[in-house]
Length: 118
Image (cartoon, rainbow, N blue to C red; front, side):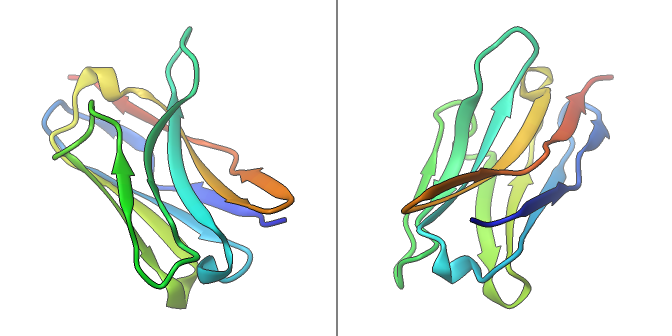
């Protein structure tokens, strides 16, 4: 298991930027994959971005709706994964969740609210 704590959400105007952080209770490199999901009111939770944190070569995945605007990255020294969100749109409004997955566990953070509104 791994405990995950997100931070960095808030209220931002359309076109603005936010960076979400997710700090893990153990080394990111020991976790098979890390990802960011989001869930808007009345909608299902959806995968936003992911990377294979447990591999020496990183591959990333982005949902079509965020490609070119969001960037997932990690810092092994800080056991942290980040989601840089640029050119934010009202439709990006949601609770964002950090996910860590490996054999035997599928762990979630508590979520952080992102609201894009003028």
